[in-house]
Length: 335
Image 1 (cartoon, rainbow, N blue to C red):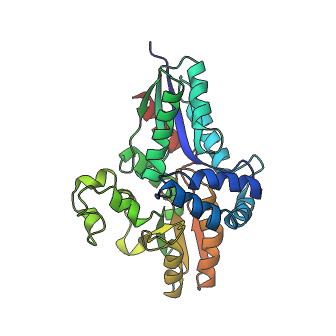
Image 2: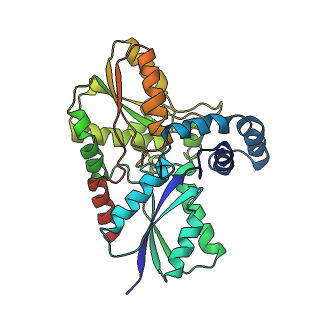
Image 3: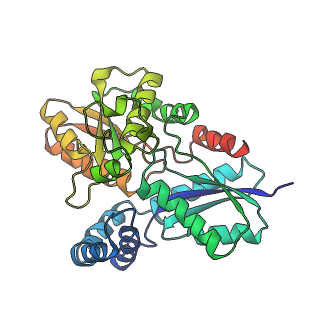
């Protein structure tokens, strides 16, 4: 019988919340050619001259505001997910990070030592982007080639519209949706528009019209914006939300490129200034709570909303190790 295993892959985190550790992490992350999509020399200049001199200090302070006793929230919560999934399966389950530790390389080598022949590789990103899914897959393939591993890699495709995923997402949010609130923001991680257009091989569809995401097109297979809009539509239908009670926004901008709009902080200001008092924010692009949810939304987003006249912002937790999500991953792993 083929010896199988599951390898979950998330984005990653600094080893500590100290400036030096954050600087190493940002250097590895931002020098990925799929994150800043420029030739190496230009990428090196931007990272070394404009990012690393100042951003690590600010990022370290942000990490410190949400750091857990056991470590980075992303790593701690990802480990909890791994353990919960392991309890549901009779095959090895490992967790790797694209940047930082534990690395994809270390975990594939560990599985190889256990004579694993087939790995279900699950990049924990519901929506496709080169800067998340593609770089994660290519790193796994690089490691296999580098070490001449005979393991077969089966990659789980982005699951943005999988009914099981949508069901788990709604189940996690339901207790919050049953409370009194005025508006729900779907806040997705932002992406430069250039990343979207680059993957449209026709050059004629993506972002060329206001309703491009609603028009059937082959580009949707790799279009991040179409996929997050689809997730939103599926969630809204499943939860029975009124169209006036929600909106979509994008967070975590970096650099001067034009990014997907509207920006989450701008949307929070608009809502508060229009008289909205209680908002919920859900972040479906993340399956695990991390700096971008716990600090950027729950802390800074709340400050922005209140300063603009709002009363209360509540972050709906990510799927994390919720029983519904663990059951979904277990079902997929057994197929």
